[in-house]
Image (cartoon, rainbow, N blue to C red):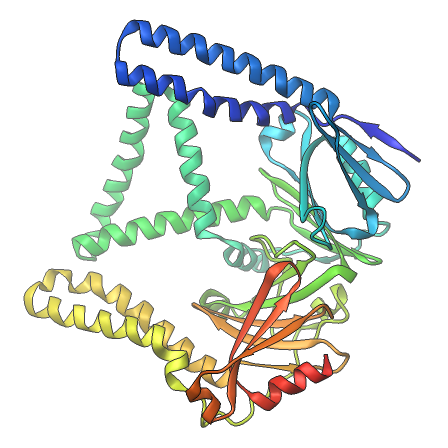
Length: 463
């Protein structure tokens, strides 16, 4: 069966966005001259730019399109000449459909294809109608059985929301949403918006000042507000979240405001990453992220599980296993290799706190925050000295453990497409140790510090 069609007309709006950027150039010139004639000329030029960009976008939309053949997908772009991408179905690692509320109102879906090869492209993103997106998904990565493996509810849902919260992504989304809201409200509405948000935030800060010092109260209020927004966005994005497996395809879907569906080809999975962040250790639940092809895991875990209950993850991915890792003798492992970041930060924070206690006692409570964070980083460095390592497991998978920042990563590497590189300093060479770099597809790289040289050589020989 062969199906073909054009992209959704949202494709035109995305192209017109580039025209709005070009419209800024005449306006800058008008602002520099600051007279009515320059403003009139700039508006005429902006109108011409928008008209040309609208015509180009319409032609690109009319000439472009997609074609679904029995064993491959063909994407066509071009204005004067044709630019054609041919993607066989067996090279699709992940198919993702995202339908934010603004796309749902237009009946569209944003489709992203992550491939198993870097040529001719790592991923392709385009817009289709909802029915066309569903047809594409069922043709490339079909799902016959949707028996649910993981569906968080009750307390488990709360833990999943907390472990899925991404403060940086939520802050960026909040900033963009606030800017769009202010632009829609106009100048008077923008002033009212600022008064409501900042005014209410100041009232909350006044309440916190009854318990904490002024500077620390403001910081505590800001952190709590951002963390609350991150939890809200996580709650909306994980609403009705479900994970199932059908044959060789893992299906994950959910979200109330931004509905997202991901289909992952099991045979293309590079590794499973179990992340032990401070919040995960506190909740005793650990999120699992998948990397497949050029898909690096996004910002949402596929599931969470408790240690000792690996059968949940094995039901989704039978090849997964995390055997006990023996780092070998560690008496000659270098302390500075693991502690220099946390130790340096802790030393600087301690010195600043000592100076503040002597000269500016009012700042001392505020400086306790970086001191506590650096102490946590120092503790994780000590743990990394005793836990980091890499070894082959039964079945041929690779077990890797390393620490980055405040998170410990326990990986089960499933792909055979690996390469190993070792790095030694004169000091590590005297104790026969090295840093092992594991290179994965699509330029992903893992680093294990302080590994014995013979262990690294054995991994190279058994590869």
